[in-house]
Amino acid sequence: MRAATPLFLWLPAIAVSAHLFEEFVWPGGFAAWYRRYWPQRAASVTTRLLVIVNVILVARALLPPLLGATAY
Image (cartoon, rainbow, N blue to C red):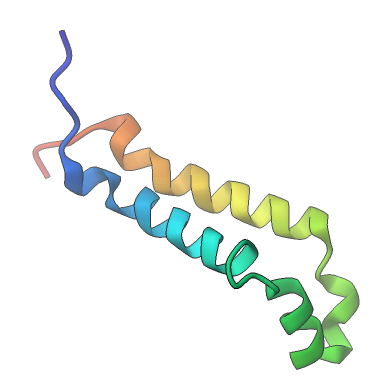
């Protein structure tokens, strides 16, 4: 039986979850804010880009608990 994953390994995933909630749910509006703040780059912020970037962010945040603790 595998030992429980230490809580500190989950902290990046918890922080990313809180960040994504804040950016897109409550109060939300990140994409609209970005388009207002940098109108010359407005076309570059697409839903596809936001999904790709945040999937990579979540995947990286889940690496510590999935790989487990090491001696280092």
